[in-house]
Amino acid sequence: MWTLLQQKPSYMAQQCDPNGERTVGVLTKPDLMDPGTEFGAIKVLNNESIVLKKGYIMVKCRSQRDIDRNITLEEAIEAEKSFFETHSVFKNVGDKSTTRVLANKLTNELVGQIKLITEYTKVVHGSAMGEYGCDFPEAMKMYSMARDYFAKWLNLVRVREMRWNQNLQGTVRNFMTQNTGRELPGFISFHMFENLARQHITTLEKPALDILREVADMVQSVAESLADPTFGFLPELTQHIKVAVDELKQQKYEDAKTFIQNLFKMESQIYTQDIIYKTCIEENEQEPQPAFPIVQNAVASSFLVLPSLPSVPTHEINAAQSNKDIQVMKTHVRAYVKIAHNRLCDLVPMIIRYYLLQEFSSQLHRVLSVVVQEKSLEELMQEDSTCAASRRSLQGKAKRLEDARRIMHGVFSNIPSV
Image (cartoon, rainbow, N blue to C red):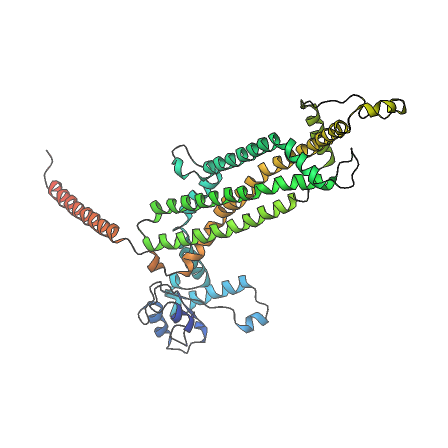
């Protein structure tokens, strides 16, 4: 802002905009001017002294005395309006005075900048949230492509679960053989159950992060591709937009990555609601189970059958009890892993969708607005040389056609009607 007493731009304005291309000059304290000096102010106001491309506005703000007298903002605005309407010199500068005019001008400047990016971010948001018309290019539909990645994740989890279940008998047998300590037959160690479940679930963390990376790369690629038809003729602006898109994508990728890593840390704690776990156990018990050799009287507990025990080989007794313990462990581990898989099948895509689609597209407008405000508008609006040449050629053709139209109009207007 400039005061009428300074008659020169502020230091900050000079540093940020030395050529006066982006600065709006604000002339203040017109009521403190000495009589006869008002015409110098009019010269500045009309951009005849120090030229600013966006011009000048004159305002009369509340003085400290007005503030001390508790003059409200509304009253000050009315007093300012009255001052300019009744002033002998300034009454003719209505379109360049008052804080209302300044507010409107600044609003229009901001709106003008935002129109550079509003349409683009609207298209990106629609693509990310699945809000696009039937004519929207398939290769630009972020949400549809993300669903394909989520289906890939679901299929990966199910295939891993199927293969794990196929090998579960041997996995449990080996694990129990290696880790059984003081436990008596029939006692299932929760520690072994916990480690078995955790061992499998943690193998899914890397594939989940791989899906995250694939979706992040896809989102960036589509967002950059959508920028080209909108800003392609403005290479400088396009480049700044692509840099901002990359930075925002990377930020949201890191947020989602941290969330997924924390999710797997939570999954390693082994937890589910009791009723959910019991229901899943019951469902597993109803499924057909592989048959194991049964040793008659091997596990009888009645005192009356004890005399028959010596006729049963010891290794057969141990094998039967071992198979039973393995089957019990399998039932519990299978049930829990199924619950964990169902959680992960939904939660991983939900995290990716939230950060890489919803948050990315929602925050893009704000990020690009900052870019436009921080950069030189003249620099951002530099046209591609080929586009500029084409535009000038078309303007020339349009001018020649308009000249021809006027000539023809003059010729035919002089022909008398029959």
